[in-house]
Image 1 (cartoon, helix red, strand yellow):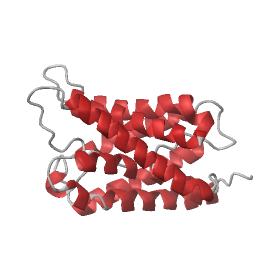
Image 2 (cartoon, rainbow, N blue to C red):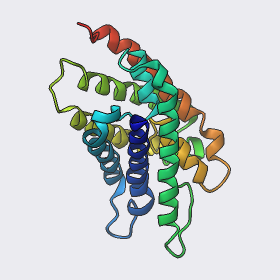
Image 3 (cartoon, helix red, strand yellow):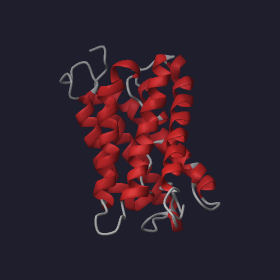
Image 4 (cartoon, one colour):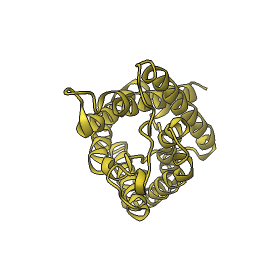
Amino acid sequence: MKKLIAEFIGTLWLVLGGCGSAVIAAAYPELGIGFVGVALAFGLTVLTMAYAIGHISGCHLNPAVSIGLAVAGRFDKKDLFPYIIAQLLGAIAGAAVLYVIATGKPGFELGGFAANGFGEHSPAGYNMVAAFFAELVLTFMFLMIILGATHSKAPKGMAGIAIGLGLTLIHLISIPVTNTSVNPARSTSQALFADGSWAIPQLWLFWVAPILGAILAGFVYSLLSPEQE
């Protein structure tokens, strides 16, 4: 139960910190943090939680990460479903907190609420194929970073930094493409609150592509560097 509570809190923080920066601070007049600030915010949420809860739950914060680790033999498959539920609930709670804060400003318009999308709902108008490949490849690379940084032969105590910076880089690449998901829980939470009817129908891509990328990375890394070596 402690592990699930940790995943709930960590995923709440990821959504509140990352999506909160996009909704509240990205375009703030004159002092807005922009794409770079949002990318850093997502990376910082993972980095800070890695050291806060990594020793409790492993700090997955992401169904795709849990699946990729399970495929690579780094995570017990019997814990997979409970972790995913905890991550989803944490993400939704984070989005709910963000909603309460954001709507406290007079004249606030909900809009896309940092939801992920493609086509006309991509920040720069990228089509479905581009969005799918971006999410698949970037999630693959994210899992490669995670699997490498947490390997028994990797430098101790540095995993959180590598993973946090990796997620920052991923956001720097793909915010214009999809608003960056690589995390089905993050995508689901924002889609539930987004204004309009488009976010839920497009949500499938932000489950399928990240999970496929994570599964592929789990297989590839376990061939490159098995943990038992």
